[in-house]
Structure formats: structure tokens, C-alpha cells
Length: 486
Image 1 (cartoon, one colour):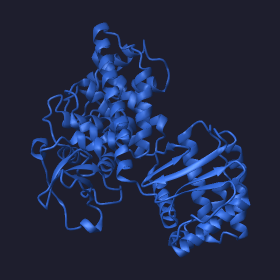
Image 2 (cartoon, rainbow, N blue to C red):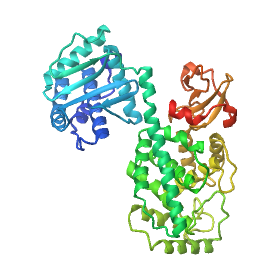
Image 3 (tube, helix red, strand yellow):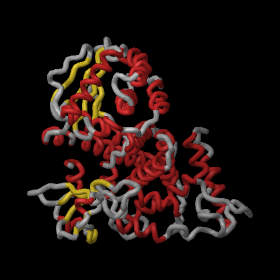
Image 4 (cartoon, rainbow, N blue to C red):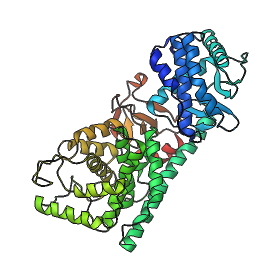
């Protein structure tokens, strides 16, 4: 058993038991929600057992608190059993691979350590499991950890143990390509659907176009971003299609949803933010302007205000009064106004600040325009686009949002091709943790003989730095393949 399990004190008795008592209120058919709940419950029970002992009254009480919810949940599952499997950094419950947030991933890593010492890769809990059975299992798990031995000799009623290392094999790691391909499929599908939508609006000159499919796609994207799945962020700067309004619309929506998620907005609200971008560009195709504070010279205060009202009036015929429609009207009304409301007295003779979502969209639009080279901008590499928006923080863009973007994407965002101080070339595949040095991301070295991945924030690589970013042609490899095969 790991030291963390033997003596961890990260949870108080009260907080641990309070969390375990919380029954699963959702639908068991929602495999992701139920799976995360179940893993969290197992984690917290093990934490309580580490604070006390497996035969302590508090541990037994914690298990008793968990059992009613387990009994109710297991009866709703197919086969009347719940399986928990750990393979590397991945975890599955009843065969569903979970998408975990950062904190959930940290807890899983602790469970992985416990499983590794006991040489088990999975547990299956049957409907007949009782408190005594779970106490017995925990006791054997503790013993296995202390003696650094496996649990092949252990037999506990209604609990089946899958023996073996919880680490991924090479073949299993390769199989994860399917996940990357799924993410790529979602992104490319969004590009195609928005392009078709724009073509329809151009042909009919009518912005009242069905958007249900795109809404569902962005909902999926918002869930991917909320689960810290950065594969999609690596695809955005690769210009998989020729730069145009459609690709700009999709990319801006994704970047905006990313910032919304990092601000703590829920996935549904993040999806609303993304759809606000989509609708802005639909409106733009029929003559309703989209404000762009970095480059547009704008009108004087009187003419700008009149133009905004004109566009809002034109929009009212087809907005439906829902959340997204409200955002469309708000963002159009604030178009062209200054960041802090100190220039031109935007809403008229009164000093006001732009709505948060407008600030997010301004920043994200410019960042993507810089990468794609649209609307008069020269195409830039992601790190140079970051430098550009940083240079205008506080003047054109909200400085707090710029700081959040940099801490989220890093100084070298995903997709940046770089040269290391060792002379090797690589591509950034993951950004540093928010609290880490933003200049030290995770890099995949572009050497097919030694396809290694190095985390520059790891002390073991403290002697290696990014010397400079390089153009795609200099990299000598296709970065899109890296994201789909890493």
C-alpha cells in the first residue's frame, strides 16, 4: 500500500463522511456522471480508511453511509454489478472510459498508486456486496500494500479482483488513437456544418437558419474542454481547411468556450457562449456588423450608437427570446464600444464596461484571426499571436482575460512547433498546469527513431528549454499526425 493510503490526512472525518453520504442523484444511464461519482466514492472511502484503520468504527460507518446509494445504483445497472478498471491515466466504470477534470485526475492517480502496489487493475462489485465484504477487501488491500505483494490469494464474497499491473501496455496506448480520432471527427464535423450553414445564409440572405446540429456539437465540445481534453486545441491552429469566416467562427467559439470554462461557467453556459459566436457570424453575413475593437476604426460616439440600434432593430424580427438570442442582442448593442467606456461615452453619456462575454469574444476573435491570417492580419504562429494580444492587454483587451488565456494556453500554445536548446525539434502537445511556468509545456520530440514526450516542467528536464518557435516547414513533420497519434 502506498504511503498516501497508510497515513493520508488530506480529508477530515467530517468532510469525508459528508461527501460519502451524498447519494447519486443523476441518471445511472449517464455513464460519465455516474462513473465519476462512483470513482470519487471509492476514493473517499479509501481516504477514510487511511485516516483511521479498516476495522475502525469510522471506516465502517463511512462504508455504511455509502452502501444505500451503492445498492440503489447497482440495481439499475445491466447485470447488477459495477466494475472499476484503471489503466495508466485512464479509468473506466462498467466499460465507460471517464473524462476527468484535473482534480479528479489527481485522485485517480492516487488510486492508481494503490492498485499498482497491490498488482490489481480492476475490481468488480456485485449487488450482494455488504459492508463486511468491503471492510474485508480493504483489509486485504492494506496488507498487500504493507508487504508489497499481490492479491492473487485473496477471495472476498461479491468482490471480484482483476489481477495485473494497472499501467497501460503499448498496444493499449495505441488504441487510444480512437479517442483522438473522435475529437478530430467532432471538430471537422463542426467545420463542415458551419460552412454549410453559411452557404445557406448567403444563398437565401436570411439568418433564420436551423442550428440544432451545431448546438449539439458545441455542447459536446464544451464537455471535452471541461474535461481538460486538449486534443481539440491542438487542431485549431493547424488550418485543416482554408482560412475563412466559417473556420474562424468555429475556432473562435471553441477558444471562447475554453475561457468560459476556465472562469468556472458550467458546460451549458459555455456552449451558449460558443453559439453566440456562431450567431454573430451568421448575422454578419446579412449585414449586421461584428465589432472588432483591435482593428476597426469605429464611428464617432453618435454614429456608432445609432448604428448599433439599427442592427439590433434588424435582428429583433428573428430572435426568439431565449438565452442565445438575448446574448445576440446584447453583443450587437455593445459593438464598437470601448473596453472601459472612457472613450466616446458609449451608451450614451454614461461610463460603462463591456459585458464579460463581449470581452471574451474580442480576445478570442483576435487570437484566431492572427493564427489564420484573416481580415488584414498577417498569419502568425500561436506563440507570436499570444505575444500580440499580451502587448494590447489593458488597452484593447481585458488584462485579466489575457492573463487567463496565457495561463491556459501557455506562452507556447498547443500546436506550436519549436526548437529545443538540445537542437531537437518538437511540437507542443499539452500546456503546463496553470500554476506552472507557462514557458515550459509538454513537447513531443519530432524524431521518429525516438518518439519521446518530455514535460519541460519536470525537474528531470530542467536543463532543456524552448529556444524558439519555428515554422511548420522547418519542423519537417506534420503536426496534425502528432495530435492523432500521441
